[in-house]
Amino acid sequence: MRIHDLRPVLLRGVAALALIASGPAFAQPKPPPLPRVGGSAPGNTAGLPTAKPPALPPVAFNRPPAVGGTPERRAVSSGTGFVVAPRRLMTNAHVVEGCTEMRARRPDGSDVVARVDAADRTRDLALLTVQTDVGPALNFRATPGPRRGETVVTYGFPLAGLLSSGPSLTTGSVSALAGLSDDPRQIQISAPVQPGNSGGPLLDMAGLVIGVVVSKLNAQRVAQRTGDIPQNVNFAVKGQEALAFLREQNVTLTPQEGREPLRSPAEVGEIADRSVMFLRCFR
Image 1 (cartoon, rainbow, N blue to C red):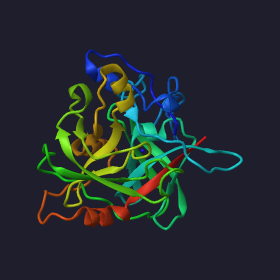
Image 2 (image 1 turned 120 degrees about the vertical axis):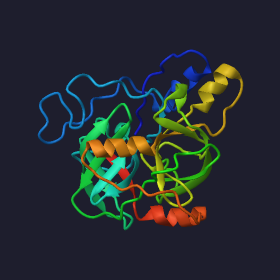
Image 3 (image 1 turned 30 degrees about the vertical axis):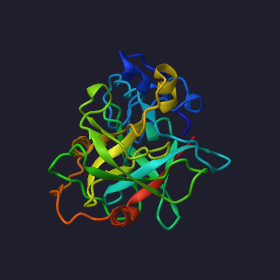
């Protein structure tokens, strides 16, 4: 989900402890602006208003350093994306922040260049385009909305260069129907996520997308302040927010109703596998 995080933002109560980056190894000053894409006026970014956009939600973003690169450019971070329409990928806005080039790795191991078409800092979502088919689109769920206690699956590429080079699957449940400080655009989940999971799909047990993984709580920093270690407190952007963002970019999808029978986590992973991409940010 690159070493890049926002500085802590102090809020009231224990919630402030979750607003810090993934730790000293991931600290960085104010992030660079999103890259300009073709046709943008100077100082503007496609998909963003001309006025200064609101700051990204101050949460712990999941972006590890990436490996590889070329003499001209080097990979500085990595994340996860997934196919939402033919040749269109979704990820987090913070995954593409400051990148001069994005590359997506297909399941067969080959790379394709991905162009950043739009990014929404408020929702922390971005839309990319590739020039070749990279897999089938994952389907979003229309109704019902996420439910507390509902079992969910994440699928992505955590800790690139340290863990397996292939995708990782984790399971958990929906813990709360709002994010940090009651953010209505997000849900809280217990499924473990790590740096590199950012931008990956959050799936229900029918294999439908109900969210986009975005961040995790900084358990170490919370423990330093409270003496207690929080467990499995992570966040995802709600699927309805992702669908609204896609509609704004003229990507029309037909969400599906939640359906039976439910599948096993392994079966959900098989659905996701053809559609989830490893993303690298180059500068």
